Amino acid sequence: MKYLLSSIFAFLLFFAEAQSVIITGNAKTYAGDTLSFYSYSDFLTKLKSTVCEAVVDTSGSFTFNTTVSEPNTELHIDLAVFEGILYVSPADSFVISLPKKTAKLKEDELNPYFKPMQFYVPVLNAKVGNTNAGLTMYERLYAQMMPKIFEGSSGRVNSAKAETQIKYVEDSFARSKNSFLQDYVHYDLAHVRFLAYKRNKQKLLKMYFSDTLVLHRNPAYNRALTEIFGNYLFEQKALKLDSQILLGKDFTQLVASTQKVAEIENPHFAEYLILLNLVQKFNTENYSKARITEYLSKNINLIQSPDNKHIAQAFITEASKLIVGNPVPNFMLKNEKGELVSINTFRGRFIYLNFCDPESYTCQQDMELMQALHEKETDLLDIVTIWTGGTYNDMLKYRKDKGYTWTFLYGEGSSALTDYKVVSFPTYFLIHPESTLQIRPAASPGSSDFEPMYFFHYREWKRELVRRGQLNPNGGKTIINE
Image (tube, rainbow, N blue to C red; front, side, top):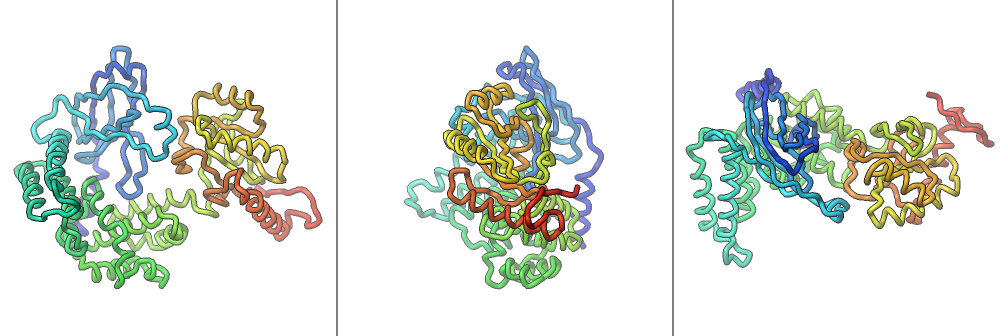
């Protein structure tokens, strides 16, 4: 009962009346730029949403205005090679400092694994106990602690020595009245203990998580939980989460089994741990994505915690976008003729959709092959390239200079890359004539697999049209009923 009441209270707090937050500062190197802060919906799905924007004036001054309802709401700001993190609470008024503007190198732009350097945004008017100042201090102590833990260890850690260093950092925050900061330090150091010497997962689970409230909004809590227990329920021989799902166990039964096997007192934590493991498994390529989303969709009403149910629903909505057989995300982008084009523009034909950055050598090679493919005038196949580099005029010039004649769409700055989860260039998809996902990822035009793959799906589609009575089996025009 106590977990239900606490979860309902946390859920109501999340949707409580919002209050204004003002963030100001001066950063001359960003003059003329539009900067934006964004937040994550939660730490499982990590869906981004822009919270506020500000134009930096010619003198470098900027002012962000937003509203938040929850204390210590985590905001992020992307600054090319840097990513700033700022914690704000209702009615805060902060003066912040930003690093000197530094552009990415071209190789960083093309590197799908590039990650900006994270930092806590300095608050120049921070009061005693401010989360941002406290985390900056913690990062400094952490940096001093880690070499001492592993100093002269030759791969082996002296647990007593490590515990002494960890306890010193813990004690530095013991008197803090900031519960969010204390929880952050507590769970971040739990992860350090695990990495350094405490490898018994079951003991750590019981020590740190099993009978406590779920801290959905604390990044250190979620980081420790994800990196230590992200696959835990699939590893347990007495549970085997995938087997339980295949056996048709509903979510209530899964929670009961998880509580019993993992010795978890809090049922809402058991729910969250199951969701975490399913999301982590979804993000690997060796497990059925459709099975996970279908399972959660069928069981969404059995999730008891309002927070957990909200996260599960967000995951289902997002995950369903790029599952084979589901409708693909729509877009509205300008083509080489200046016309706005959407997925439905190509309805009734297969789309060989690709995302390319012209600075990528692989993209350059593949574009030559796509022109050859386009010139074959393959039946019912449209090639569509979403251009992600430079300006719209750069796209027009590049296409004209190279003599390419298939459809180009200008995608720089659009949500298309995020919607299609593109992390490297080139990336290919085959989209069905009814605007559903056929293949992800599709073979490249240089692969010997592409044309046989396409013609297999093409023939299957024509057979389907014959069965529907929309195509004469002896030939004739394909007709799609809208």
